[in-house]
Length: 235
Ligand code: SAH
Image (cartoon, rainbow, N blue to C red; front, top):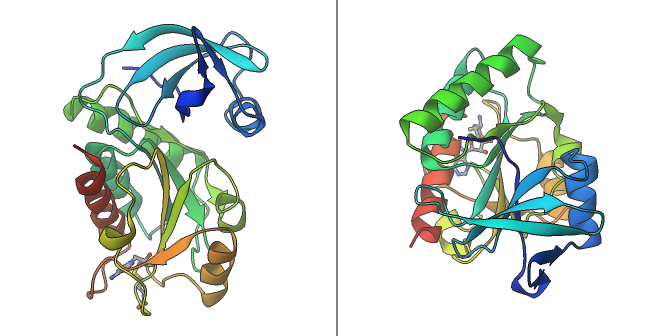
């Protein structure tokens, strides 16, 4: 198993053995993921095909196709506000089993704690163990804890959802796009998101969604959201 980063590439960007990267993808690979020239990453076409690629300046070289059977055809990034106690352990374990690609622990208005570096190490260990037990090809990336305001403006996902327990929002199952390549989904802390957070997420291009009529715990909501997405996207 490897920790290589994955990125979705549109069919028009493939030119023989090269991938022409957009400015946004170059920024993402170099500034956000901190890859350097010569580093490897996974290029996905969003339809289940994967390639090992090597970063060059404005393009990438395709090295070889990869055979993947246990990964989802879509890259899911979970932005989960940190719950109390050790609740995040369970979020990491279950969402890894379900196929998540990246998890960002989010510090929201109603999150009290800022986790220690030891916690981050622990979550990464849990992700590795869970990926192994689920026979996944990749270990999800557990990102450094990030403030909500930065989390909602980062990334290249074409579909972004924020789960809100109250209000008249459409159900995630009814809005999910089955041929998405990158999905970003956010779930809140025990106390829920503040109104301001929901508003700023919507302003940043997120769609507010419901996960059903019952109020789920902060630990349960990501698991339910991931389950709905996998059912919609996996063929
Ligand atoms: N205490 C809050 C609920 C928080 S639940 C309240 O009473 O309103 C924790 C998080 O789980 C929420 O912020 C939301 O992101 C998610 N969640 C829980 N139940 C949900 C539901 N039915 N639909 C959508 N999101 C839900």
